[in-house]
Image 1: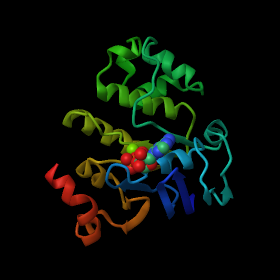
Image 2 (image 1 turned 180 degrees about the horizontal axis):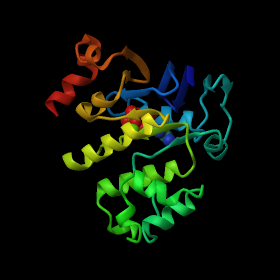
Image 3 (image 1 turned 90 degrees about the vertical axis):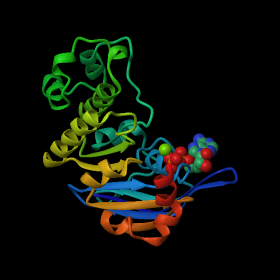
Length: 229
Ligand SMILES: Nc1ncnc2c1ncn2[C@@H]1O[C@H](COP(=O)(O)OP(=O)(O)O)[C@@H](O)[C@H]1O
Ligand SMILES: [Mg+2]
């Protein structure tokens, strides 16, 4: 469904991405982990059309999508959510969904992200978990086939994380492919069939979560620091 081929991106002297390649199959949940600054968010920005790679290609169902705008990609079914949640704080939950590209399924989406009872509440009064679910609901309002989630579990309580886990699973059962950047490994590894590890802009591991935690390079680059964090 999604293919990233040898993508490179520099910001001045910083090589944010250095020859990154991987594939995401239809219906898969792929996890992406790696230390801060590894290039994870930059990768999402490139895939979703917010920035252009210096070289390399990104293909959606076999067609190159490099150079397409985020709005064009949304129409093709590829949507991202942001690490820092972007909603209209002075609008209600329901109004936020309606401006997000109304597909006529507002009540269905509100129910699917567990916000039906909060639909008339102003977004600024929502909890972190509710805000996160609203931002996912806004992505769902565009009928995505593939969803890129940047640290969806960050700042959530264990209960909120459980709710989000259930929502992500249900979306997946409904055929939405997902790529999830996440530092909360327990939550991520419950969901992801496969994991990609980035370090200094390079893929240092690709495989099963169980194998990632045993991999020497992954432990050295990332897990060591997470364990002690
Ligand atoms: N717009 C930008 N301008 C300059 N440097 C950037 C920009 N975006 C990211 N970077 C740099 O690129 C590297 C990768 O950043 P990022 O993709 O945000 O990493 P991650 O999401 O893995 O923490 C970092 O060194 C970061 O400072
Ligand atoms: Mg990031």
